[in-house]
Image (cartoon, rainbow, N blue to C red; front, top):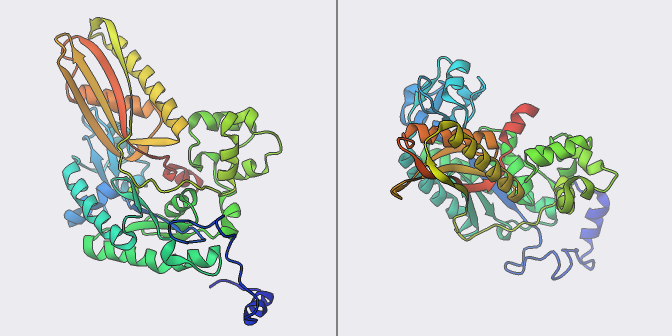
Length: 394
Ligand SMILES: [Mg+2]
């Protein structure tokens, strides 16, 4: 319930006094006549590993690591919460995961099963928000339920979303046997932070009146779009938390350039990005054609490293992370092959992209003769993940 001041109650008691519902045509969403935005971010908990634990009950409560076995040069695609407690993370080398978690149960990914599960879940979610759903990855979506949740004011509207959020969680749990975390807020930036706040099986509402305080202790990296480069620049300017950003007395443009205004708005919890309801597939890639065909490992590694850095820079500028990394090779006879790998938590770090690309080349034995061309690409682009930051914060 909203705490109401006595003055406000008195105002309402007089029918002659109209209740202010926002300036006409200003805050109003023309499509629905909704004044107050209500956005819900929905995120399955440790999705790949949870599907495995559901399907193989003997694995429940055990540290499940989906990816290559630790005896092989490979990577982790996903980890259950039990495994995360040991420090296991997606995009980590399996050897490292095996060292951190010697009793971990390593399973080969079953991407087909996860995709089928994802379709079932998204169908359930659509039952609650119709076509106002932006799916951002295999297990994550934003829902715009503004129209159904208009209250007296912004926070009253957000509170109306709580029963909807509980129903979605319950529907997914009872029909699919999986838990989800849901965040409710007035925009995408905050809704995503909210769903990450109390994982697993969480439900968090960030009220408009609390948002500035909520953001204050978070590291700047938790803000949508702040990647390694921006974080470094901010740190050099003495800005480490979102609170530091909120209080920054100088001109942020000298630190982060043209992004300063957006960044300042994000730091105050303001974000008017709409849901993207189209399903255009986005990807970014980088490739190199060698002057002389080569299978020289140091040359190929140097080329991959450069491409990974280029991609990480582009991802950071778009404030995105990638769920899928792809490599492309072309041989002297122009035969061209591509291979890809998907990981549960989006990557935007050049070292992780490089590691996943190297893994693909090795796993598929792609460098068995000289290459004419080598390329790396990323798809499955999503807003930058903040989960790892929550873990370091807690
Ligand atoms: Mg998830």
